[in-house]
Image (tube, rainbow, N blue to C red):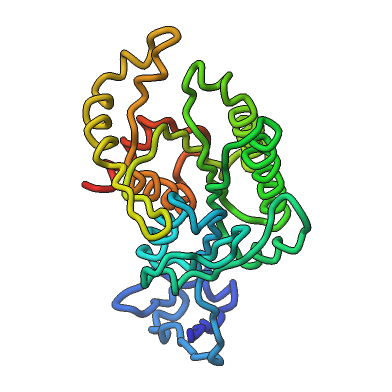
Length: 284
């Protein structure tokens, strides 16, 4: 609720004849009399809608990276929804109850597009491995469909979890990387000012597979500590990409959510060193 205040009007001739204010009143130069101050009248009470809330849609929110992004977004007070082929999450954590779970396939019908209703930002974690044709579809075509639909819906920001280059691995996983790069190109075209691409390398953390928890950090964390200070090695020809440091899934989630909600976060590509830098800034 808010109240509007309406000031009583004075004619232009009266204003021009008046001197400056003195003790809240105006002195008239014509008759030296003291005019009364402006009267403030209360107008009708009107309803002022609250500022629009941020709603985040996470594509692949029930996966390893996606689930951490959902939890990070909830911790920041965002309304969170997820879209995946399986729909609901298999996780039994309490935070999962606060996510709106949608079921849909980005490669099939348009029925999934209703998940974009009211969404202000999107983070895509969609990706996978298989044959070259399958990898191109899941990493490229599926994400391109999502990017175009989000742009048509007027979504403000779109963050894509892509992947760092690994030299020879790019040729061994041709469909994977060609799909990723095609999606990146589409994102920068459709969201030139609100599109962010994160290119992490190996993402470590505790990964849940069925009833088992795999502590990938046992290997990833020490490697990250060593390789993040060996950036020159990453520039070596041929073998350089193999020295790309791993990054913690929590860091990826924090930077992804910030990139999706902070209007001053710079658009474009953020490599693994940028992810580490932004994450460290947020932890200070």
